[in-house]
Each structure stands twice: as structure tokens, then as C-alpha cells.
Image 1 (tube, rainbow, N blue to C red):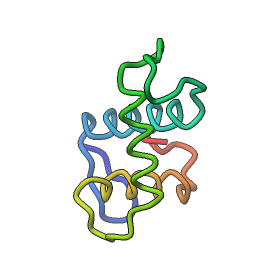
Image 2 (cartoon, rainbow, N blue to C red):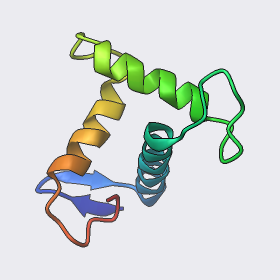
Image 3 (cartoon, helix red, strand yellow):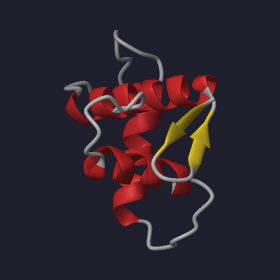
Amino acid sequence: LIRLGAKRIVCTSTMQLGQEHLILLHHARKCPHAEDTICPVTPHCAETKRLWRHIAECTHKKCPRCYSWRYLLTHYRECKDGKCPIC
């Protein structure tokens, strides 16, 4: 377990998953392959592109589909810790 922020304690496997999700989101955002084609880099690319579209259009603050992804993205954008184990 590692402390993240003032109160938050995160287990190392959760941090690794957060890192993997950030990498996948970044890839899907920049990937030139269309959603209906197979991406040679990751089989999750098309699904993640659909998630990006959902996140951009969703207005439900506690949406079960995108809430944790939004939290992760917000943390990444606002994190100022150069030694953050997630970012």
C-alpha cells in the first residue's frame, strides 16, 4: 500500500492498473486505426475509443461506466507530484 495524496491509500496492484489504463487511454486517443479495424498494438483499442466517446458525451456525474476513468484522468491532469506512482 502507498499513500497517494493526503488521505488516499492505494494498493500497488491498483496503481499498476491505473498506469495501464492511462497508457491504454493515451494510445486509443492517438491511434490512427478506425474503430472497425483491428489495431496491431492492442486488442482493447476500439473499446477504449468507444469509452473516450462515452466520457466526452456522458453527463451523469456518477456514471458506473466512466466514473472511475474520469477520476483517473482528473488525477493525471491535476497531479503535481513528480514521484507519483500512477502518473
